[in-house]
Length: 85
Image 1 (spheres, helix red, strand yellow):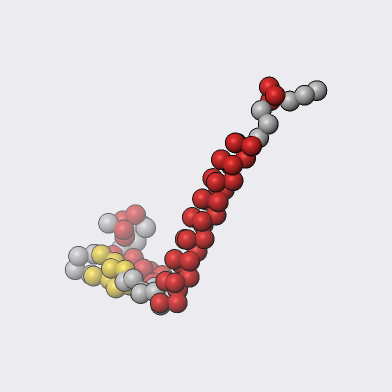
Image 2: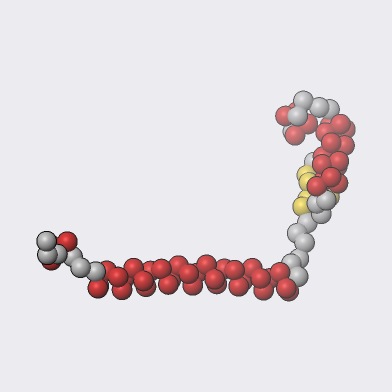
């Protein structure tokens, strides 16, 4: 099916996909019988997992701080109708 969309015969398309996988340094295998490309997932190192979790928590904390600041500012903010000219 992919070979038809690429306007190639199946052998050329398979060779092109193999080269694409090699050049991109992906962990993948081609199942020629089914005509599927099976992508493998590389497990993250514990260090990388920790970095991603810290980054996620940092973004969430910053969002919460922003919401709290807005609520406090809304409480103490001088309303337009109460301003003296």
